Image 1 (cartoon, one colour):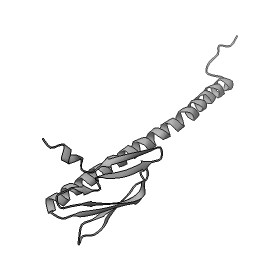
Image 2 (image 1 turned 120 degrees about the horizontal axis):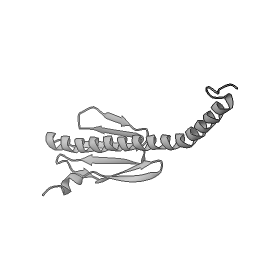
Image 3 (image 1 turned 90 degrees about the vertical axis):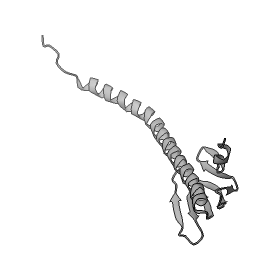
Image 4 (image 1 turned 90 degrees about the horizontal axis):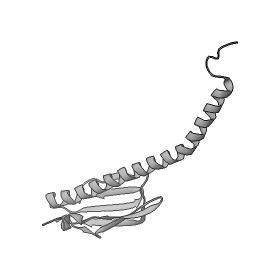
Length: 132
């Protein structure tokens, strides 16, 4: 009688089939999580950028104009060059124009941002409410 050593081809094929099923089930969930994480990262970049623009307008005493349309966010100060951010997961619909005055106050005070599955509103003058 021979002693069995190793695995048969059938056993290996069964294990590979089970692994293939697991990857097929988990793969789409992982891709969705990655898209959500990237969208959240872009949201944080958007928040920091707009907050920085309000602070810059206040610190320099110059207004800043922001244009948000499609996947593009552009801003410029009077006499300055235009800066642009292009997002992959965030979308500005409808097109919006925001003015930040020399005191750092944005008008309108809200920017509507859409992601594939949800719409969010970025409060632009939130720093005013944080004062004591």
